[in-house]
Length: 326
Length: 270
Image 1 (tube, chains in turn green, cyan):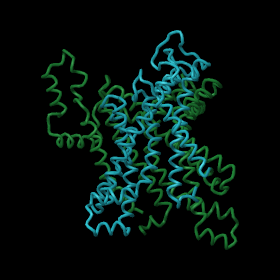
Image 2 (spheres, chains in turn purple, blue):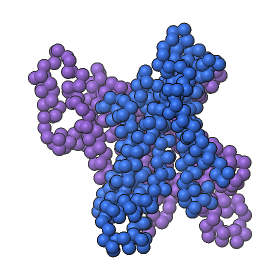
Image 3 (tube, chains in turn yellow, orange):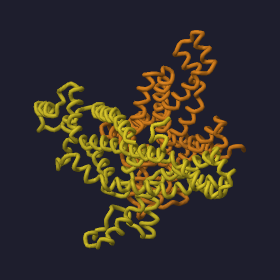
Image 4 (cartoon, chains in turn cyan, blue):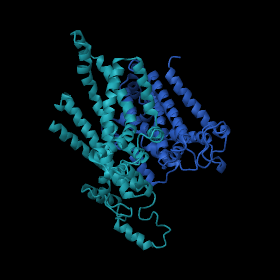
């Protein structure tokens, strides 16, 4: 297991390099330089000033040297300072926004798991039943529905019409006066819709995947053997088939991380949740380059970590991989 | 009616395409005509989908929005297919180190949160319909590349390819005339499904205000107005979103249906 982990970690190194190259590339395909943008018509900024800034930011050096310097700073987690008026380090800004984004995504993932697996298994077991057909319709709609539209509809129904749930932010205005459990309840109410909206796409995909995985396993030889031995159908299904059908789900989990992290921009903007997605959105609108690049790199690294976690979980669940067999 | 779902998908795709093409002739009103007397009218016989905050007819704007969505979908997918086929063919034909290199790069882009990447690029360029097409295209070729590579790897070992090779057919010609035509089916399927994805991404970007810029209409940017007026004007949110849902659903149904029809092995699995 340790060898496997080390191998995986070593495999991440070229990916990390790739991420930095892509990010650095994006920064430099942009027309105009960061020091010049917005200053072209500023009479207070002379050509010498711009040149000074250029030297200050190292933009006069050759590209590979700039990349190397940027990489060196990245390696000590120095993402530079935000262009915003507060000039705070990018890392600080991201770190204070990160927990809520990770929370929402973890909850969404847990929700997907808790719902998609039973749906998939039931659809496979009761193949072509009304339940199965109904779920197929749900899956197609789940794939096609724009998450922000679903969010808007839910806000309209539960927030505006019924007034059951709050529609923006993560706290009520009197959060500070609440007791501990009241605060948790308030937070839960605020997070319910965002988590559901984040989860919908994954929910559809995962239940579909679970269904076909289960169908495949049910057809395999060892299940036939188990049946021939006279094991009760429920034992076959839920002890032998389910376990094996669950394996590929773990990989899918890793693959769904980029979508969840990317999707947090839309969900957080929609529900005004102060997380990394909203920070990123603000940075894009304000052309806050260091912040945009910092978040892109951090988001990609988080995705890599998610993939790694999924792989490790897979190895842990599947002895064939754990022991380095074929 | 052997494949009702695929036909339904095809019908949706066809209808939306016709409506989009005919938009200038069938729109009941000028989509950009501002009329202060008509501000935020609910749906009526005159304005089927109501009017927006500037008194513009929402149905007309949605018809014009269909043009934007489909144009972005087609061009972006065209770019993605071009890149994917080129890289996939190179990897699948050359094999060895070229293959390993290209596939590593593909895996790398695949684990990037694409939406972040798109937004990052939009931050540096101006948001415009052309930039969006290019950016979506540049970030969605990975699936096609993998698929073309896999097809080519398996096709290369077939007799007719080996026969052509031993007759001295050039590499270029072998790929174009012998290998790629046999991989057309899966490419077509992923193109159709790709359009659905591109339409969703475009509407998401426009919803965030980073896509198609007002006054040009797009389904996504009508929804932005819907969000701002969520308490008073449900129709601004409801209809454009429904249009996106139906369109994407249509392409997905068509794509899945084509996949089943083209690959008999899958027929009993769904």
